[in-house]
Amino acid sequence: MVQFFRLRWFFLLCNIFFSVFFGIFTFASTSIAHEVQPAIVDLAFADNGSFELLISLDLEVVLAVSKLKSNSETPDFYESEYARLRSLGAEQLKEEFNLLAQDFLAGFSLRSDQGKADVTIIGVEIPEPASMGLIRTSIISLEGKMPQGAKNFVWEWEANFGPSTINIAGDGENEAYSASLLEGQKSDATAIEGPRQRSLVQIILNYIGIGYVHILPKGVDHILFVVGLFLLSSRLHALVWQISAFTLAHTITLALGMTGMVAVSAAIVEPLIALSIVYVCVENIFTQKLSRWRPIVVFGFGLLHGLGFAGVLKEIGLPANEFVAGLISFNVGVELGQLSIIAICFLLVGFWFSKKDWYRAYIVIPGSIAIGSIGGWWFVERIFFV
Image (cartoon, rainbow, N blue to C red; front, side, top):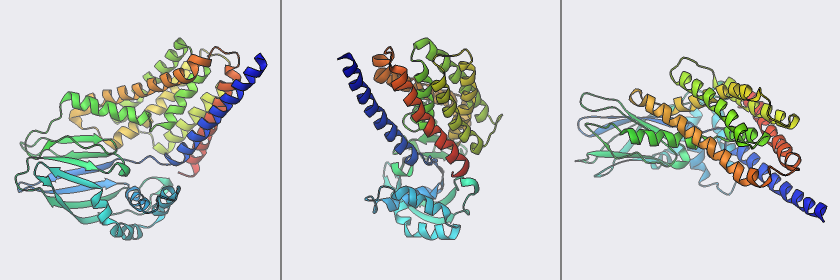
């Protein structure tokens, strides 16, 4: 009878494991085949209420999203269309944009307290396809005018276009302004003229949110790395040693990367992050307990992940007047995301099964094989296909 119930538990866990595995693998191979870089929006107001916009963006994302609306019945349409657009020359991509210019204009708004501003496209700069699979950045130039009597504005960028960062340079009595926004998030109502400085609380909450979302749900590679750490030992003190080493390391390289003291190409960092996942999982399979060297190894991998975080934060932008608060808050958000992963793992698996004699055979080893396989695929993909 005992053997029968163990067998039932085994098949139940296998079903859960394979469901989670294929869910993660499907998400990993589609949703984060590329991470959408933020659109950088530079806004400049003139004295008469007119303004100029320069939007630097991954234009292929905008066009693929716009076309997806009429091809939603095709599951893989977005990825295949994005890949096709990336292969086009500058003039060909410009022709594609001209056909969908109205969809682009409908995908954002600059609203004031007196109504929506009218915006017109005045120029498009598109480089030739980037080498080594790197994203090419196109620049859309626009101009418009705020409704008469407008005192403030709110920027909104369509959620499916990805995150955005809006910047206004300071000019005389008009303060500089910068805000990094998540997908679908509107900016705060901001003065067109005069003081624009965000409060410290707004800055802290903004960058904590960005750091947290970069881990959950966006940072699938970081999620799998942390889950790999959890699998070897779900005991609190073992996790504390590893997470502390990881935290210290990525805090160091995040700060060094953002200050420009260390600069390593994403083409090197991203494959090594994938390889760190593989290493942790292989060690899980062949080691039954935490070695004294594990925190040191995790520290080394934390340095790599910190460089990855720095790359993300550089893309988003961190104004000089918000640098310290933003950097610390982003790091806090990352830590909260990692702690959330540990908490989820513990509540779903560790609390119920970690003391079972079959835990290693049915949870640790299969889970490590699955996660390590995904990391291995990412390593190959980031070296040869991205």
